[in-house]
Image (tube, rainbow, N blue to C red; front, side, top):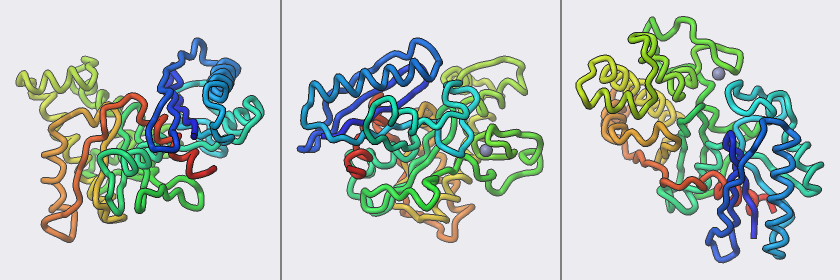
Length: 299
Ligand SMILES: [Zn+2]
């Protein structure tokens, strides 16, 4: 049995993968303060409870997180306590057991390729579109992490085939500018609407406005279609996956599953791509489950 955690801003989600292949112990624990001491205390409590409730639990724990990776910047608008923090070392010292970290995109790819919409696919790529953009790649249900453990960092590649105004002044939290994260994160999309209208709407409201004939909202979504089309086409050009999995809150836009594949012929050598575009399962514990799979692989 293997424990996975997912740090998702103000909560830590948990899941245990049992040896028969099912998941149990899916819980959410609130983080009351954005302090590293509070985060470590919550994770330590979770670990103790899990190991007490499940004596056969393996020693190693895996954690999905957006920040706290050694030598990498962390998103400034996520948990502040992860900025400049070596989360893995802190967790290992606090929990007294080995810990492995995985990005949300990697956790998503691993769970969906082993249990979800990309099951039985040879190559699967994930694109996690939420507060920030993350990704991951699996080959035959095995997560490929790469020499630097950053496979799937699509969010910090430049937007492909940019038009001139897309090259201007989009500073990314990674320290560069023009990154995909600036365009395809939730805040990036919401800023598009705000820049034109001076009205701040979230993605659901922009989608509803587009359906109610708001021309600006409709245009913002059409631009999103094109940018996501270019980004997914770039992923196909690199990995030629059997499936691309969209996850995170932006993946709930149903239009994407029709509009994006229609963009691909303009950017690929083939006219008809066999790559499938799939929406990740609607499960708040997906990332914790992906982390549990990762813990199983590392044990
Ligand atoms: Zn960046």
